Length: 140
Image 1 (spheres, one colour):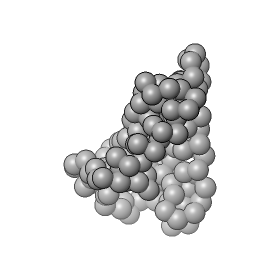
Image 2 (image 1 turned 60 degrees about the vertical axis):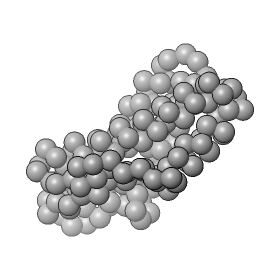
Image 3 (image 1 turned 135 degrees about the horizontal axis):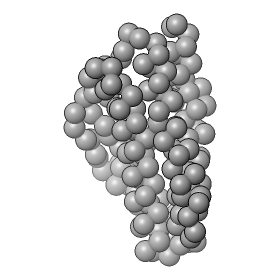
Image 4 (image 1 turned 90 degrees about the vertical axis):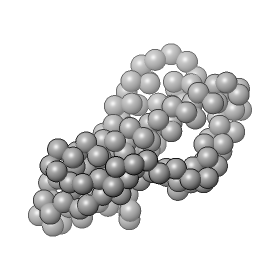
């Protein structure tokens, strides 16, 4: 397994930083953008952990301007796919709870970002985690 990063991911990081700069200033914006990117990576690592327990090969984790992704084999077992689909958003909801409990504007923005990432990933439209979850249930 390897990590894939391209120029569009840098563009996304810069856009996040600029967007966060107004309420947080440059230092806070850089910190918040870095933490949101780390949240995306943890989201993808949760997918990897869920399938790796069942021996599913993972080829790469990556970040592009469109978002983070995992390239892997598909499991023939519906419940492995269902667990994998829910693992990423679950991490975002846990990060939301952790950062919500901490004081400060940076923590508040990182918490809200994780809540948004978790919710939007559960909307069942292709290629979201919600869509993958619904597909796995349909294969049961």
